Each structure stands twice: as C-alpha cells, then as structure tokens.
Length: 594
Image 1: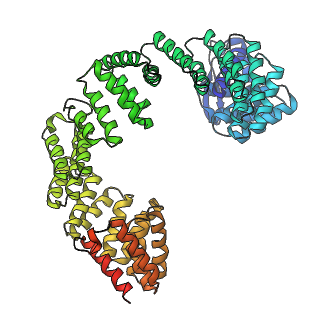
Image 2 (image 1 turned 90 degrees about the horizontal axis):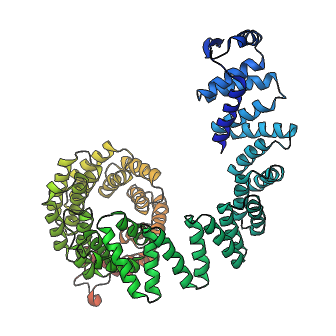
Image 3 (image 1 turned 180 degrees about the horizontal axis):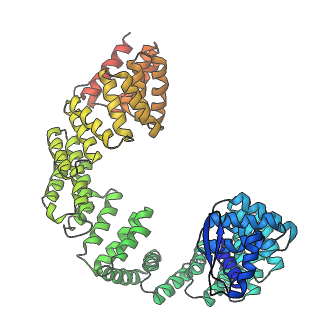
C-alpha cells in the first residue's frame, strides 16, 4: 500500500510540474542533473536554480524519485521542507520515502506534523496507521483508521484493514460493525461479506455467519475461502450432508481441485457412502497417472499432516484406478511404515523401481524397515543393490545412498566395510563434510583414533563452524587425556554454535573432569543430564564426577539409571551383558559392597 502511494504521489506531482519536451541541466553538489522542460520554463528554472528556492529542490527530488534514487531524493526533499516548513505535500512524500528506506520513526514524526496542521488529511492518517500497525501499536492504528473511514467512507480497503485488526483481537462486535459498513457502501464486496461472516461466527451468531458467507459465494462463486468457512461451521454443527454438498459443488466446478476431491472422498467414507468414495478415488488414481500434482497433494494434505490411516484409505482407493502406479505404492508404503505395519509397507515399497522419482526414498525406507526388524544384513543388501544402478541414479541420490550404507555398516559393526563405502563417497565429493565426519566415526569405532582426528580436522578445515566435528575432536582428546587445552577450546566453540546440545555439554564436562576441575565438570555434566536424561554414557560420566566428590549414593543411582537405559539382561546374572553393561554392573556391585 505504501509503495503504491509513493508511486502515485510521485506520478501526480510529475504531471503537475512537467509537461516537458526539452532539456535543462542543473548543477548541484558538482553533479549535473538533466530535466526535460518547455522553453518557456527555462527562465523560471534559471531563477529558481540561482536562488536555491524550495521549488528547485522539489523539482530535483522528483527527478531522483523517477530514477528510484531514494536516498538523494530524501535529501533534496528535506531541503524543500527546511525552506518551506508549512508545505504539506513534500512532507507527505518524504514520509513515504522514509518508509521505503526503513526509517519509520522519521516517517511517523512527519505524519504527526502534518496531522497537527491538517487533522483530517486522509493519506497521512493511512500512512500513520500503517506505521503504528507495523510497530504493534494496534489500538492507535485502529483509531487512525476509524478517522479515515469516518472522513472518507469510500475508502473500502481501509474497512478491510480495520476490521481485520478487530478480528485478530477477538473484538467481534467491532469487526461486525466495520464490515457491515463496508457491505453497505459496496453491496458487491464479497470479501467484506466473507469477513463479516467470520466476525459473526466469532461472536457465536452462526446463522448470520452462514447468511453472510453464502452471500459472498453468491457474488463470487470461485471464492473458496468463504465455502471453507461454511464447511467449518457446518462441521461444528455435525451437518455432514451440507459439508458434502459444498465439496461436491467445488469438485463439480473445478475437477482439478485435488484437495477438495480428497476431502470429499474421506467424507463419503466417514458417512458410509462407499460406492461414491470408490468412484471418486478411482478417478483420482487415473488422474495421478498423468498429473503428478495429485500425488504431491496427497503428501501435502495427508502425510505431511500425520494423517497416515486416511492416506492409506485414499491411496488404496486410487490404486483401484491405477494399480501399477509406483508413486501411489510409495505413498501406501510410507504410510504403512509410519503406523508400524512393516510387512504391508514392504509389499508396497517393493513395487517402486529405479525409474520412479520415489525410488531412492523407497530403497532407504525398505532398508530402515529391515533395520527395525533386526535384519540389518537385508537392509545393507537393499542399499548395495540400489547402488548397482548408479548409472541410472542422479549424483545427489547416489550420495544419499552411500551415506546410508556407511551408517548401516557402522551400526552392524562392519567398520572396514563402512570405511570402504565412505571412501567411495569421497571419491565422488572430496570436500563432503558428511562423508569425512562419518569416516572419522567409522575409524573411531574400528580403534584408529589418529585417523579419526585427521578426518575431524579435515571437516573443520572445510567448515570451521561444524559443531559436531569440533565436539568429536575435542571429546576424542578428552577421552585420551591429551591436548586438554585444545580440547576445551574446541568444545567451547562447539557450545557457542549449539549451546543446548547435551552431548557437547557432556564433552565439556569430561574435559574438566580430565583436568581435575571436578566442580566445573559436575556443573556441565548435570546440565548434560538435564538435556539427555536417558543417555547411559552421560549418566556414567556424572556418576564418575559424583564419586570424586564422595557423593556415592547419587553416583549409585546414576549407574542404575544407566544400566536401565542399556536394558536389563536376562535373569539379571550378567551372563550375556554387553561390555558397557558389564562395566556398569561392576561399578554398582562395588558401591553396594562398600
């Protein structure tokens, strides 16, 4: 609104000042500015130029405005006002320039000066109202806009602004008053009827809301917002048949409105109109074969909203129309996975082949399902098989598959295989920080700390703000008890980037533990436990620090929590405990036997 006002004012002033064909050169601050002019204006311009009067500065400001040189235009307009403080229009234009250049305080000061001289200056009231509104001074903004509609009742856009300000503060009676005035001024203002309906609905006057919203639809049938607001009201009243009627009208008028068709099909199912639902979803399935936005809409409207069971209902119906569509099978598979139906998910995901845009996502999802089912080798096999098709997979997708495969090998304890895969990734992208970081982790797991340090240093060399690499390197030093000052600096930098990370807080605590500064160690480790209360390693670290402070009961409680986090062993006899569990169990037994 402000920008358009500025352009309008500038254009109007040009029309008044210039009916010009010739050219005159004016000098100001050593710069020549050329202005078109009629021959009979040249003497006047020459006089003004020599005297430096306000007209001269105003003229130059207009040229600069035309050229979008707002900074210099403001400077010349300031000269106009300094020479003619009572001139209203230059102040108004300068206020708009200030607004465009982000100088709201200066703009507001000028508006207040103008309103002191001309309290009913409509344009200035609007500018001042917009500034107050942008600064969160809503009450003052409303007062200014009220003055506008009182003095200039034909300014329809201001009714909309004012009414919405009342609506946002739930002042429904005031909003009703404003929007009623708008539709009285303009009986065809369908947006006005829409907001009037919303105001009535907010005030609890649902029948009047329905009447206003229906009027909005009568005036502009394509205005869907009004129809959807009617849907909300009817839905609250459990008038499902009326909701269905609205959606049927929308779909009939616009068969490509996929969102409305999906909503209608789900309503049919909810109300046991199964044949209608089947027919509608089958039609959507056929559309999906030629219009990819159908599948994208299902993702946006259902999956992205965590409506997985509804997704399955919709997609199963669509598959009746297009049984082999791989995109639909992917949607069904991902939805089944997200509600824990792994076998059903796999049966769908297996139908997605390498030519589908969802292929890599389906492969990764299948691998993760096998991982969830404790069948890691099958997951690794799925990823390896996909990479055999690398000539048919885009480079970014190959990068994703390689990184997942590396992570699967690490989880399976096959560290040398992980190292080989990640090196393969680095051959594709030598400066990929994810590959360097993951490779460092794999080296760490395989007992090669020096190579871990090299990889983490390489990550930091590429990205000095890589918090995880900074932390990993610092923690590696802390675990070994080496380079503790450097470790502290590294972890501190990581904390600056991720101040709420429980893992980084734990690293800092362990650095201080190794430095024998137990008080600081406890401070950081307690914060780490607050952030990661179930992490066994962090619990163990705090337990160790408490022992150094002779807080044995608290340490024992932490060790027991750590053991629970790792999971209880069969029979409780420790016969098949992991190494970590054995270590914790021994610490617990020693403390209990003291």
